[in-house]
Length: 164
Image (cartoon, rainbow, N blue to C red):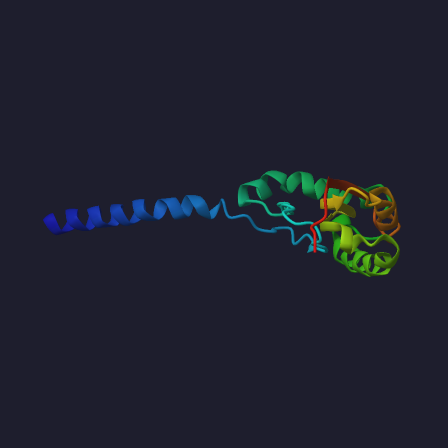
C-alpha cells in the first residue's frame, strides 16, 4: 500500500511539474497560416520589428472561421481566379520582391526605411519605419500596382535615419 501511495505521489508530482509547459505550449507564437513575412530593409536604427503573422494556437482557432470566410468570399463574389484569396500570397510575395528591386533606384527605399511586409489574402501590410523625407505615398502606390494585390495597408511610422 505504501509503495502504491508513493507511486501515486510521484505521478502527481510529475503531472504538476509538466502542467506549466503544457499550458505554455498553446502560448507559442507561430506563423500558423504560412503567410509570407518579409524583412526587406533596415536603414533606420532601433525600428521595432512588428509581430507579423505570428499567433498562438488559441488565436489561430479563434480566427479560423473568419479566415476561411475572408479567403473564400473573393471566389464566391467572382473576383478571384483562385478559390481562396490566401492562395495568392506566395506569388504576390515573389512579385513584390521583384517590384521592390526595380523601385530602389528611383525611390531609394532601402536607404530610407526599415520595413517588413506581411501578405494575407491579397493584402500587403507594410510595417516599420520610414525617414521623414521618404515619399511613402509614391512607394505605396508603386507597390499597389503589383499583380493580384487588392490593397496596401501602410502601418509605417516616421523616424530619422541612422548616421553612417
